Image (cartoon, rainbow, N blue to C red; front, side, top):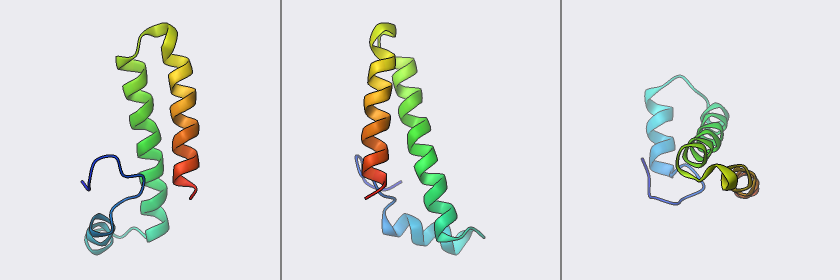
Amino acid sequence: MGSGGSKKLPKEDMDFLMENTNFTKQQIKAWYSGFMVSLISFIVLNFCRPKQGVRVAVVMATWLSVCLSR
């Protein structure tokens, strides 16, 4: 889905979801934001060393929330 590393759902993916579901643009954006936060949390909790995991999770969650709010 989309290009790697992007902070926004690519337009072609948004168009596809709007054409093939009953969700609004706002609902899709909210879902995508939540999905990205959950994905980062999953990666941090499962692949970072335990002592670093919490700090990395906080930094990544803060960065993601700033990016998604732009």
